[in-house]
Amino acid sequence: SILRKRYELLGLKDIYLDYAGRKSPADPIHARLFQINVGDGVQLKLIGEKLHICNDAGATLAVLAGKACEQWAPRLDLVRQVNVLALVERRKDESQNPDFQTMLKSEKWDVPIVEVVFSSEVSSFL
Image (cartoon, rainbow, N blue to C red):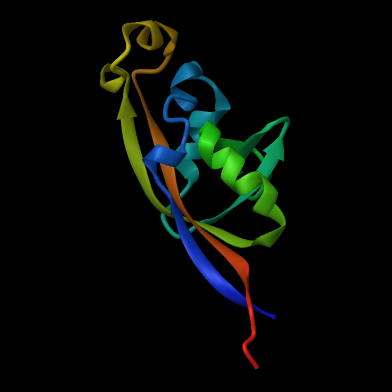
């Protein structure tokens, strides 16, 4: 078998949207998100049972949602590159659940949308 490069988008449905919003505006995560640019390389890192999107220093920018964690944790060793495709602004008033809204400490924050480049085995028919 041969290895082939594959690309997959981790979008809003794959990200725990309110992660940075639950941090105070003074938390360093907001400065890290502000410093990230489209095109920057980031990394997926398993911390505890969650997969984090981290900057090049290994500091958390975002956390993957449960289903995306389950999907990517077993494939982490296949990941070759992760790039920021976009930063989406999220606001406190976008949270539909009033119980969740009370847990948010920031009025707005950025959520990174990333592209994962990974290896996939292709069966050879030769």
